[in-house]
Image (tube, rainbow, N blue to C red; front, side):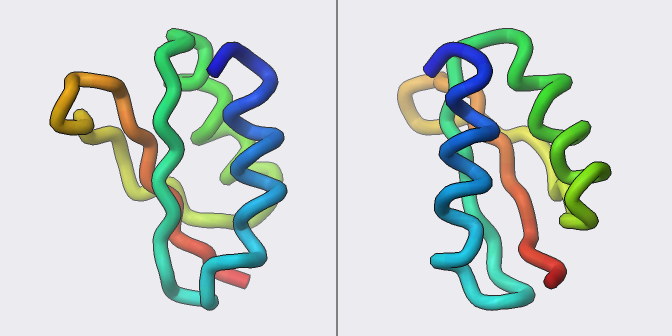
Length: 66
């Protein structure tokens, strides 16, 4: 996904995750590396970090705090 879609999809699906649970965002757009943590700071959620999917796609993990 290209920006701003990763954070739009993250916002849209965060409510599907229970508080304390995590959600993973797969995004090939390099801007997501900055945008996802920034979104977490603005929305009061915890950015857990970046991992690679089995196919190498960057995956950004977010923990729902509230």
